[in-house]
Image 1 (tube, rainbow, N blue to C red):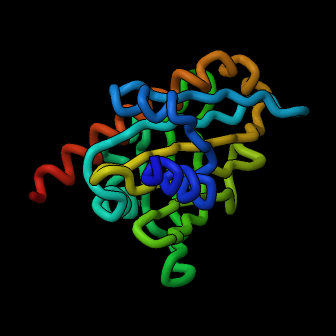
Image 2: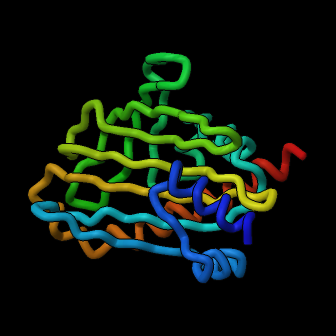
Length: 194
C-alpha cells in the first residue's frame, strides 16, 4: 500500500492523470484509460490516453526523442525533420502530415521539450508555426512503474481550417490509432536493442 501511495504522489507531480487504484488494476490487465475533454470555444477535444507499457521510462524516451524517425511509424506522417536545436532539452521539429482529400497536407513545426524528474520523463510540445493549425500542444509522460512505464499521451489541436468540423468525429479514433502505433514502435525498438 505504501508503494501505491508513493506511485500516486509521483504521478500527481509529473503526469497529467492520477489513476485510482482501480484504474491501476485495469492498466495492469492491459486496458487503456481514455479521457475526452470538450473545451469551450474549441472545435476539437483534448484527448488523454494512459497505458502501462513495457520497458523503463529512459528506454522509451530515448526512442521517442529520435524525432526524425517519427515519419517511419506515425500514421500518415510524411516528414519529421529537426530544423533547430533550441537548447540541450528543446528541439524544433518540422512535420508534414498527409490529410484526406480535399484538405491539403498539414505542415507544422513544434518545439519539443524533454523534462526529467528522477526516473520519470516528459516530452511536451507546442506549436511554432503551421499552415492549418492555430495551436497544438501536448505531451507524453513516461513514469516508472514496477519496471515498466506508465505512459500518458495528451494532445489538443486547435485547427485553422473551414473543413475542421467535418473531422471532429475522427479526432479521438485517430489519437487512439497513433497511441497504439507509438506503443508498438516503442516495444519493438527497445526489445530489438536488448
